[in-house]
Image (cartoon, rainbow, N blue to C red; front, side, top):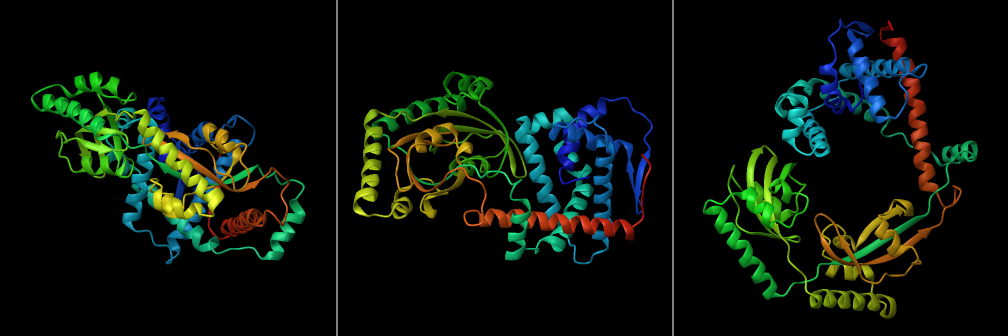
Length: 424
């Protein structure tokens, strides 16, 4: 089975459990490891759900079985290789990541457990051995192919052979930005804090948290459910919120917690390791027109200093940007295909040329709200791939091609060195 094994088993769990139990049978053997019909059907189910292919198409079952045989061959070799070392903490970390992905998909840890009829702790026990095997295979592949890099001549030969079938390079833009949150007057903050404190006092005096959340919380996504945030892992909250929620004991209620989103009252419902199930009441800090105007004027002044006075945008971003990720990097956001930018960002940069900086634009998400100016440092139009402009891209494609060729040779060799047999 492939590296998505845990996700596959979780996703197919309920459906497979509901199916009529039938006698299983062996459809292949690799070394001493059998592949069962149920394993094959589960993997085909995965392909149907995630690859959007017709599993009834001729050859699909055999292709899936061949892929499973190849993984068993690699596992057999990995178990013999003394250089393949997978630590138990690595297995634990991978299991945590996979479960967290599923929790995020279904909404909460509680819902995940309801869907699959077992606690998360049992899921991790059930799939620990298979997860370790997958990590062993990945470690062996890295040892085998990780250092393979094409020479310049190989890149040129790859391009010469496949240039007519290579896809066009989409339009790309390289962006920097400088983000600032408008500041709220002290009077407005004091009024909001007084309101939030009254609600907090009422809850501590015996008021129903969920009822107050429905009445007062300004988080539209959770207010109707009594402020329930579901289950989240460390690293998925803004830092101030995370610090507060992980400091609480079960059922405890926080003091007022201030973040970029506003003031929060938090109740920890349950904690399991690095995961917490919590609920909140959010009071958003209302911005007056004066605060917004001052922020936009300040951003315009920064823009003018770059465009007309030779100041470096990166220096200003390091000094003033409140984006904790891009600020220390001089505001660097990344190089993106234009079509993959959010619609609002597309509108912002559509008519900007290299060296242009946008007017202040509002930016809002689930965790931040404020204004930004966007700086375009590179713009590449859609074009046919060529050696001069797309060397790095072609190098990556050649690397993937070369590694795949070596992988196929290796699998062919393993099939001559390790016993295997299919009985489909």
